[in-house]
Image: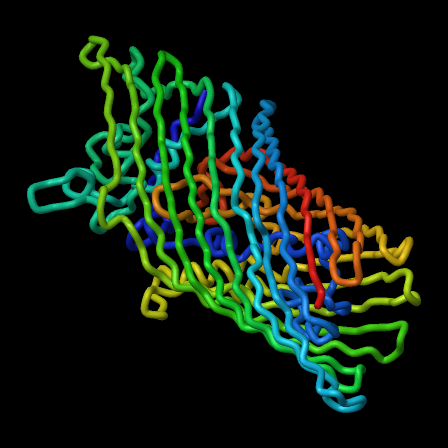
Length: 536
């Protein structure tokens, strides 16, 4: 039986509209996949000190100066996404397979004819898919679930005057200034006043017993289905030059196109055939720009060292929202059994927010060992400062709520460490085998990662996930048909671990008065990539 939760203190929740973005929204849009050519993928992306691959434009652009010929290359891939969830003992698996074109690029080589000093320079144009958001997952729980989303919304609604601020009037729109999830839940019948206090609420899913005491209905189950799609695409212009075949320098200017679409359906069932549903849609579009600079050196024929800096990506973003909610409720009034069915939705127009966003900056440190003409080993270490993410209003300024979000980012995010390792062995002059791996830890502080604080989410979506780390393992082959034409193939196995929440826990003075029960979520991606290249 669920505990009946009544909120008697003012909550430190989102001020202003429900549209304000939170720290987890900022984090989502900063993520990237292991993406590039098949050779790059097969070696775990450890190319910061190697260069000679168009993927270097996205890591260390000094690697562009390694080219001593012009080249064109493109990559196609098949991706299978398998997501496993485990929520209070119930397991669910969802699978999807998609075909995509991940990159296409051209590199031009301009030799100077000098043996010393500036021996040559290169330029390149590339398209590369940084992130594929596509996946679906489902999670289901049974009677072990002890807290309803209606309890959560009742808590969020505290302080809003239900008689004057929750219901539309002739000249009044309740969505104009209130927390949208609270208004939607109230109008969909999730919550009601507590006694005659029109600013305190309780879940509607309960009844009064023979002694006049309130008894909540027990939850018999809940389910959440989420579909995500979209991508982050990067268009780059790069330059690199070689000094005496010892030092190489490079720079890249990038334009980023972000598209993200989210759809969720959440359902709860109670005893006595009572139920509720909450459906959400979110679409996000963004355009950004960034800059990368790098240097690579060959102190000996055996060793290569590299360092690169990637600036933040500065985005202009727009979020579009729409949500529907409803409930079916049976109850007793004056000794008679009654039923009520309500539905509500957010406004059809003007449900959008323009804002600006800055991703974290990154440093890349690399080393590679070259064993003659037959083998190499490469290692990259990438340091990303997620505490430097920032959110701004559409004029590039902050307001009280955005300042609070940026403080949350600084307080609950830290550096992310990524290690990539790759190796290649040339079996014959035409045939090569490769292997690699990459590991990224979670940049979230333990209090966030372990669900020990309240999380504000975007729009009317209470659901969110918390990062628990990413690992990639890859193998690949390469074959050179002629000195000019070659093909590479790679297979990458990625595992992304998260905790998925249907809604946040809530705290007062450091103590939880509403405790969420998360599901463990693992997304396994199997990717087969094929690249074709031509040197001239």
